[in-house]
Image 1 (cartoon, rainbow, N blue to C red):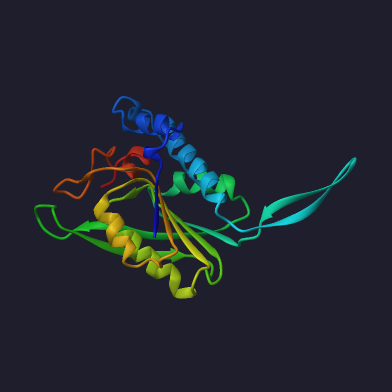
Image 2 (image 1 turned 45 degrees about the vertical axis):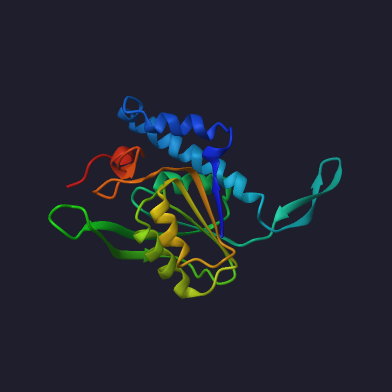
Length: 218
């Protein structure tokens, strides 16, 4: 299992993530969403280096040139609703990819809001057998919704490879997801934070990504 933490590298991803964490910056939803998209694009670019390639001859007005192009069939999946801008970032790079959407969300199972379960209602997805499956979800906290999404998507067949992408992850969530991933899978994170608070939110994190992107919910 490979875990890539971009916070350990000097990249512009750190700048965008610092703005996402800033409470003043968060007041502008458009800017917040745009940075989620941009981080998705950058992780997608780095992930593209791991794909399999084959040369293709391209005819220009003045001649021909062989260019190595990805040969993987890609499915980009996300968890509604917070994952939509992050998913768009990946789709901007892998613009011919198929897409999958899973409605899975956390539900507190006790009055104190310290224990969390996962409720899944809906999935729209192509078959993933033999394809490269990328599941893009900005927050990997408890890992419950991600693990449920992996299991649901893989019911249609075994992917060629699975990539998990997130903006921020907690170590606890990474460990949960590792239990349902094959050994050759990869987890890509803009940052891995120290842990979660008693309400299972990542700390320091940046808050509820869905609310910050789209507004509050009942």
